[in-house]
Image (cartoon, rainbow, N blue to C red; front, side):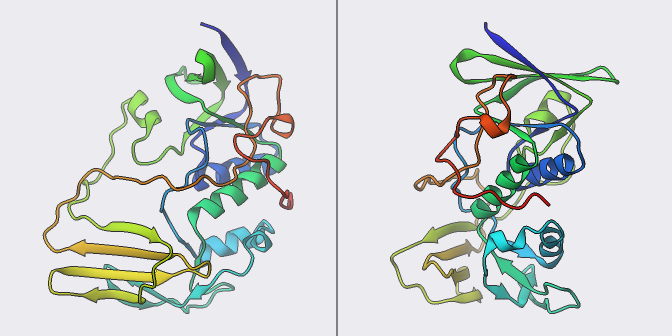
Length: 266
């Protein structure tokens, strides 16, 4: 089987917002970093939709807020459905409504502009930690294997972490016991509601500026089931490397359409 090799300081597994934020911070500090991502295209799932005050402060410290435009701000929050007032002392009080897909693109472009390298279409398959060095393998497109050598490897690959499985790390805590169904709906006028208690469950609906309404419902007594996700049309993505160690992120072909702008590198 054909293989490529790549050596760097840090390998980050997972190109979601957490992985790309970490990659950007490392690259900002002059650390060599490669992000390995098994997806072939950016996520279009209905995931997180909120940036809280501390997140906004961190993004502001890296001059990234202009990339988010003017997102709507919601001063009300909740904990377990109990209303909370989020207008606490902060430069960005409240919660700011930004789809995770947008956050992921902005952080990805920022990390790449600072010199991080993104290897999409590569799924981690093996991992060995000798103490002074981490060696890993990732299965790439066309049957090629990418062999990675680094000082540190960081798992940012979510709930069903491949890294955790490969090293045999337990996941402390308990699985969800209740189910909340969520959908982003367009073309239908749905009244807004916040944790409206109905006879058989709860209903939440909030309309975004683009006309899409996020709807969430819980039926009393419904048990949690495996996640099921619909796939809407794809969005643009940061540029991805091809798996060849001779390529850098600046020269790499796009994993999706080429981004139209490069965020500030501060």
